[in-house]
Image (cartoon, rainbow over all chains, first blue to last red; front, top):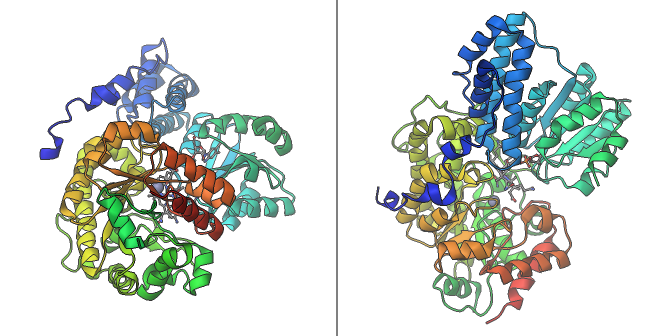
Length: 249
Length: 337
Ligand code: B12
Ligand SMILES: [Zn+2]
């Protein structure tokens, strides 16, 4: 194809070569098997990760494999994402690899791993922009929380009903459109009316800080990297008002 | 100069009487719907209301070009994707599940009846109505969707993002048919009366995929597409496109539609003098949320930085106040030559 002829330099010029980026990943563990597990998370290899996870499970407790290999790998992915080295596809693939590893560990334990608390996540009704939510799910999952993922285009009533049934420590919403973000105050008012007082994180490109903090329960979630910090505060019993003054300006 | 002469002057790299104002994306708002008495959801799938809503950009706002359609599902729906209506307030979007998995191989050629599928016939009719009503004074713009975004609608966005890294080869046949779908639609739109073709490829944004994926996967198809379209073209990719703008420029559109996130001075250095820069106030954070004065300030800043056609940064949010859009036109009017 004629238009591809003159591009031999692009990788060097823009530093776009993924091989270069990979080298920026830090060592995960001094234990070679755990390091391999972490590395496969960082590289998003959901298939290749199985062998080292199985090998590690021969000698190590499943929760150690999760915490010292899989989650450490995902923490490294968060760092690379925060620093702008990683793009969305890498984060999504890393989450897949981590989840594949966790599934093997859970099979070995014969039960689901103990989680710190439940977080209900959703993308607003009418909104299919769910990438921010997908990333939040991955980070919360890696942070040891149980994610109840309601997916995109999720009706207000479904969110409220799920919160009533599941009793999570926190709810999150992602909205990228000015036409859909109006669902958040509706959810918060309905929760309040039902006597449920839990933090609601308003996330997504459409919502600004000023708006997010204009209705009860809501705290502005500026970036996905905040997900676990917010959930930890909720878990520790911090109320939404205190969380708002801590995280928002 | 009337609007048509003004825009033609800019397209020919000549001096217009003043800066033009129009956009690569949707212009429809609830307020304009009220004013022209045509509403959603009909405006998304019936020629008459669609044309009325598009023409409001000229008759109500004073934009220099009118443009349809207002959603991004036209080609994907005609290729079999299921669409969820947005009702009276929203915009049609992709419904789950996507038509294909990444292990499928899509058809190599478009179905013989492609142009009579889904909402394409009504869109073509709308363009013809717009041409007949306003064609003497205003250029008619029609939108197609870029190959990467169509492919993402056919496969699902998350799956497409994964494939961009792990199985780029499997994406190629999807990009190929998506390019053909956009190009065939463009040809039909031109036959129906379109003077300008805008290509929106939101999912190809560096906010979403790696710049390397844009170069390796998207660029060649966009270049092929622009080569096959023989009217002036616009390329719109969302977000800060600094890392891909060289290739956007080389793909050959006449106009690059840029969001304020992109550094315009740097962009100009990279692409050279030829592509015309279109842009202005951020569609969501400024046009929708701020006051007319703030809109004006944001627009002026962008013009000073190198914008040649004033425009909302991206699709106009339907709740945007009319006075904010008119404020933009006023800024354009203040830049005379
Ligand atoms: C990719 C994209 C798409 C993809 C979406 C793919 C997907 N599955 O998500 C596709 C092509 C499908 C799409 C479609 C449309 N899109 Co679109 N799209 C975008 C784009 C380019 C990027 C959005 C994105 O994913 N960003 C990356 C993610 C990670 O960002 P984010 O979700 O905001 O998350 C960040 C924070 O908000 C926060 N966050 C988010 N959630 C959470 C949760 C927690 C707990 C925390 C702590 C933080 C947090 O963390 C993230 C950063 O770390 C934007 C423009 C832009 N550059 O922003 C337009 C944009 C969002 N789209 C827009 C529009 C209008 C549309 C369409 C209606 C287009 C049309 N005319 O048909 C359709 C929507 C149909 C529908 N009913 O939903 C508009 C919305 C305007 C508005 N504000 O009202 C935008 C803003 C473009 C514009 N006009 O300016 N789009
Ligand atoms: Zn855009």
